[in-house]
Length: 184
Ligand code: HEM
Ligand code: HEM
Image 1 (tube, rainbow, N blue to C red):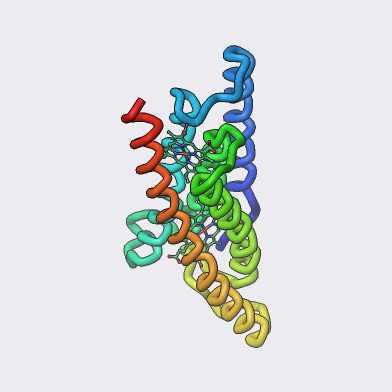
Image 2 (cartoon, helix red, strand yellow; image 1 turned 30 degrees about the horizontal axis):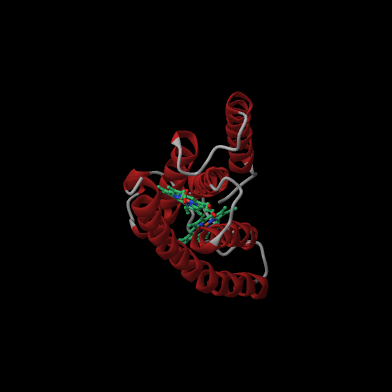
């Protein structure tokens, strides 16, 4: 069960802390951290690793039947935490320029985050056990069926967007490293 919204608060506070660090860097260097220099580059790399964790870890746990790896509800909360903090760091990496493919990758990242909130909302409508297994809850059968159908439809949109996002991110990373890092 996804109870409360603690993970949203923890993500929000982490983003606040990152914003403060970003602010200090801007104050000291008197410029927007460029995407290809130490701070901006670091933000892009760490943010992208968090996004890769978002894409893979929850799905892996979902497909493993073993409880040894922790509760599903924990992994979904972790998914949401890394799914917010990662994209935020990548946004700060962009140096507020959104040209070409890198700009399109940023747009896809924003879309998946917004879509995540929609999914989170639908997900909380379906009653589950503490381990995340669906139960026939107090909701009427018709409403439960509707929520399940909606979640399936949502998956069919959310997952391809995620894939397009990672394809375009890998092309951006390859091109950026080639032209902006190695050729320098
Ligand atoms: C989803 C993840 C990422 C997104 C959405 C993203 C987005 C962006 C954006 C919007 C820019 C600015 C482009 C411009 O100047 O118009 C940029 C620049 C850059 N990014 Fe990323 N980035 C991501 C991940 C990464 C990673 C992981 C690396 C390195 C391993 C990287 C390396 C670079 C470099 C080197 C530049 C500077 C390019 C230049 O100065 O011409 N990016 N990125
Ligand atoms: C980088 C950002 C994100 C990526 C790449 C991503 C990717 C994914 C993927 C691949 C799945 C399918 C998991 C599976 O069924 O195997 C998923 C499910 C889900 N995501 Fe995200 N997500 C991101 C951000 C978010 C955010 C910010 C939220 C909430 C605010 C969120 C909420 C959810 C929910 C509720 C599910 C459905 C869980 C289920 O049906 O079992 N995601 N996400």
